[in-house]
Image (cartoon, rainbow, N blue to C red; front, side, top):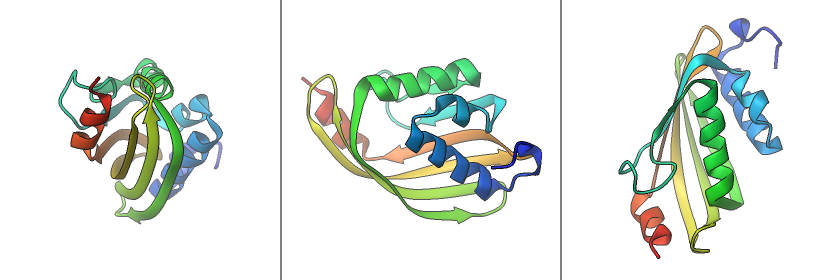
Length: 138
């Protein structure tokens, strides 16, 4: 990943995010993001800790802290990446246990990244919210 992300392609930025995530390197992820980056996981607000909108570096830290506090992954796989310029779509699979209940979640996901001037400016995740809600329920 080039030091100067302003020259990085959208695909390179997104690949860098996943590489850093695989290492557990949150500062490395945030270095690829614009200062006003928005992290959003689509789901009924308040029904699960990650179904919310997080913004900026503090929001990014809160987002990744919530992942670590609530989900223990046995699989996180990127299956396809589609680069459409400013928007990069990622199709993948995640399997994890929820910390609160110990129940398993096994879901495909879609991640949408918007890249501007060599930096990620937004991330949206779509997955099987009904399955997550059922596993999160006591």
